[in-house]
Image (cartoon, rainbow, N blue to C red; front, top):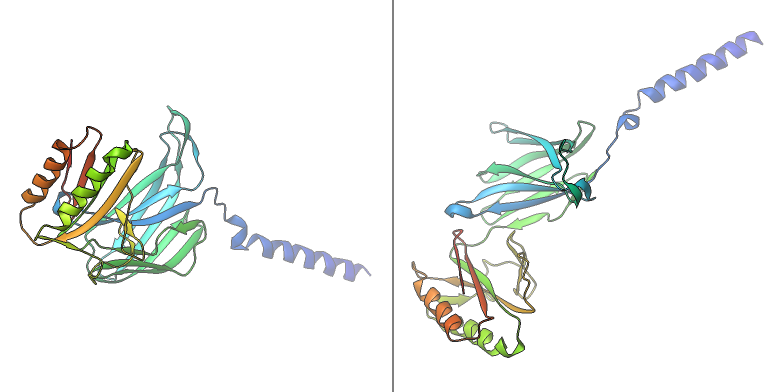
Length: 269
């Protein structure tokens, strides 16, 4: 009888010891994060980056996300570790989503082994593929993270896009005339049948299945129309002239903003 009791106690202690070694018990992820790819085209350069944003709002307006990036160029292995949220001592009261930009710079075309780790407790493995026209992120798991866009298309060269915005319905004719004037220019081409423009996410904008532009920038006017074209000239002064003419000959509430693939932009008024 005593031997049976001792054996049962030993078995119970052994089971407790096994549970302490279970790695799932030490994982403590307090926050989940959005992960999104972006290609910064400012200064006529293309630099890849990853944007991290908390899914839940934080209690400080200036909360930050602490992270580490380890990139081994020889083995094409990239490790991104999200360490923790940092709440400043002089917390600016208010609710806001914490975010952080992870710059990679220029990445050569190829396939990279890619890991997104949370607090050295959760490891999400996958691949980051860099192509001449797109980036693709393929993760085997997404524990603690949510990939916003698995494919990021690179904006084709010599692309202009933008919007015409206004508040009075009577200005709609002037807005439509401006876009039609752009279409009539010999150096401007529509992208509807252009195979370089694939429906999807481009960072600064999205193209729907009909290749209509869905711009990422917030537009506060009551009405707006968007456009996207490819151009052939080396000088966009003729586009500026059409824009300035539209603004000067229209009502005061007409706003035109044009963005260029080289990172430049211009607008009126």
